[in-house]
Image 1: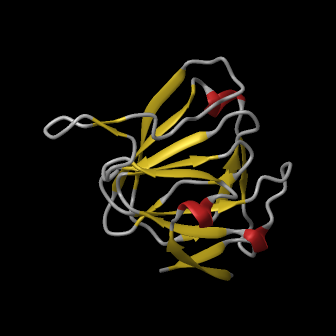
Image 2 (image 1 turned 45 degrees about the vertical axis):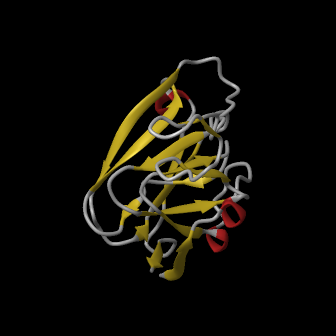
Image 3 (image 1 turned 180 degrees about the horizontal axis):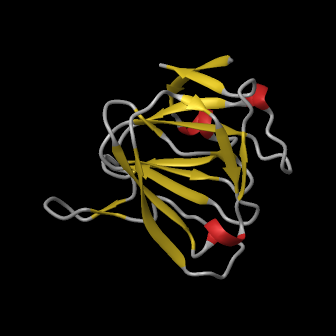
Length: 164
């Protein structure tokens, strides 16, 4: 089994797969107003080809071995994920028309409260909590999981171990 090391996520190293924004600790970014009420506007813009309603949901993920055993992509939709209650590791691979390039898998340490936007076509999967079971905010166009998701399971030889 191949092993990859998870690295702290930055806007630069995640750029091939999408965008990030620290929603819960934005600093002065996009700030309007003054304490005790500062509005941080337009931090993440997610254009989607679909005219579907944007839907928000949650993904409960258990603490488990950090092994990439499957991946998915969406042809038309960008997917937004934000760990809410634990730092998590998220894996990604380039959008390339439907074939996973196993040697290009990367893993990123995403602090709780950091919003991650996967570009349409970028391979990704369920995050791995670092400390305990966790919750991830998911944002996709309505019913994307039924009409715009391609998911594959990796063979045992293709699975990838992530280390911290």
